[in-house]
Image (cartoon, rainbow, N blue to C red; front, side, top):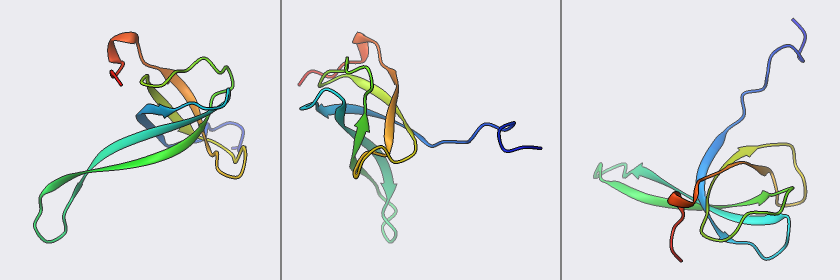
Length: 92
């Protein structure tokens, strides 16, 4: 079986665009729940990803799905896969 026969399993994340200063660079904030080791309480942890948007049509506040990719620049390793609908937008 050749490597091109099987598709790569790439990580995906859902997040909200918090900055869009340049046409193809977005900053997406992803929130997840993490359990405290000792006290077992769930807490929110956020992480910011620099994401490549080849079409340049995304705006701040939109919910997007991002996917891991090859390195595009020094900080960009994720690309926009799918934009959420306007109902999923967060008011800023």
